[in-house]
Image 1 (cartoon, rainbow, N blue to C red):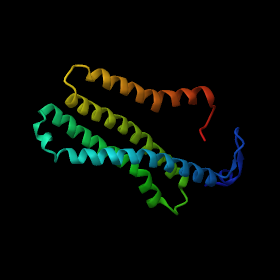
Image 2 (image 1 turned 135 degrees about the vertical axis):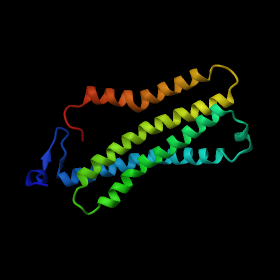
Image 3 (image 1 turned 30 degrees about the horizontal axis):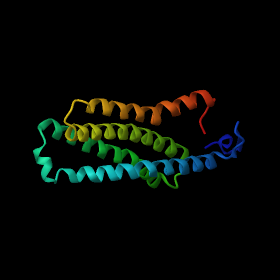
Image 4 (image 1 turned 135 degrees about the horizontal axis):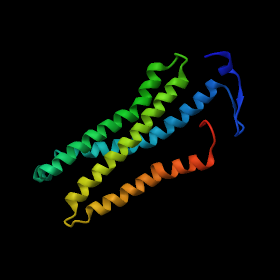
Length: 169
């Protein structure tokens, strides 16, 4: 890190922090976000793992079993992406490259959120296909998927676009 990076900076919102201080702050924020997402993923994934050992599972058709396998794989991939920031921090700790670790951890968190979106969607498809006897389940899944998209991506991106300028904090 060169001396310019070590200098204090003041940005538009009045923060006065070093590059290291900024990386520490961003790391703390990121870890809090990951904790929230990980909790939901762990509960869902744990539940999914038990389904295959229930008597009713063996009565499912091939399509529903394929959806189940896809959902379990997505849940596992989601877990991997959301645990990756912890691994990055542990392996890179003390190497004086926290801004790089934060950038990579942030990328994994975004990938984890996208995988969580896919896992939740797949879970809904499976449960609603099995639980409903009408052809309305795709509409329910579509409505919930639209809600996820609005809450998780559309509104945050809209707010970012209209209410911020330049580099993110």
